[in-house]
Image (cartoon, rainbow, N blue to C red; front, side, top):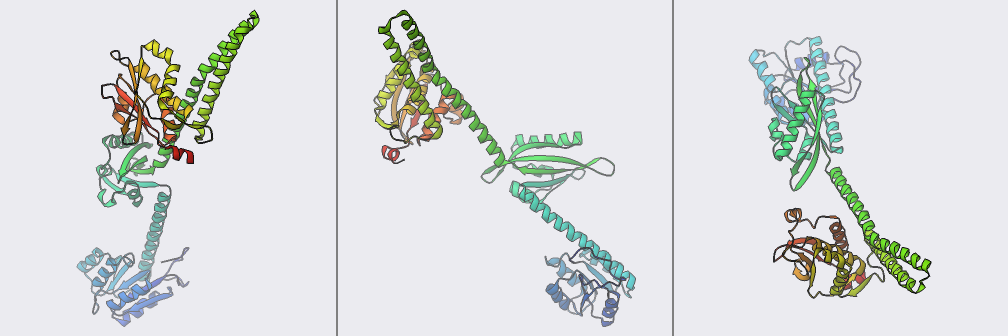
Length: 490
């Protein structure tokens, strides 16, 4: 049945050409009477057997069928079964019109899916009223199905899933959209406990608490939980709304679940990026403080020498100011390199003995090492083609950690290299304990400087990680993923 704004059929004089009817009866007189009664409907066809009626129905898909119970080849009950077993015909309302009355026949017809039952001889007004009522019900059913389809499309577009839980019967129904979120077959969900299947205990508890909150407040609640779908772990936000019955009591809970996985991941990544940016800014400011303090101190001394007229010593202080300024400029260039990932410009890379670079950084940390009683044990290191300033920052942080965390029984900070599954790895080993978080999670390190070091190494295509030291304590290892040829080709 198609079209909108339909007028009443039957006794109305306006033809209903938008409605098609099918009469199936082996009695020509009965067909004639029914066609006269239904003359308001412009498209009324007939068949004199069940087989012919089924063939016609498959050809033009009527909006309603009136059929007799007793017919040759295929009786009305058999025809009813054929209609209800065909997905295209199952929704077509069937009205039995038969002279073979009796409660058993009527009950059997209704059990098979018939919409109504009329006894012969027919009364025109009664036939029209029954047909009109069934057509209205069919139109309402079609509207409901169309609304359901549009609802499912809207839910799918918004990555939403809907479900309903009736409290009295503990019946829970998933809309089709839930299967796309949770990946389970809707046929497996019958009770509220089925809705919790496959979830971690903590997530089950969150949903139960949200339901209890909705029942207690009567205003609804929301929560977030995780569900594993295949190899993917999805983050869902559930909104729960209690629905009241005629007595004002909560009869069911309607749930709307939204897939917020992408938004959650983006938020987590954004928070991590913001945290790294803050750490980077703090680290850069901290690293620039030392040469800035040196410049300020030597400038003050130079002013004193100038005021006293001791120009001979002034040169030394100016030279120190110039060296501090050069170090500051180099550090600024390093930070810009790291921030922009511009590591291959001419003059930024050079072939350097790694041992020499480590020794230079240790010399800069001499006062810190002396304060902690730490000594360096430096093994021969392979040379590397690298951006010197950036790798110097890595060594500075790793050595400083080693100095500050060496064990009381062994003041040595060992530096060397070893083969690893990621290639040649440089390491700094100290006798202090490995951080519990790093040991448990495989994290590359904790603290401000190590995050910066990890970024540097990742930019260079390498890797930075923790490992237990062979003599106790811990090692921090890193690789430089680019070979000299690859670096020059960048």
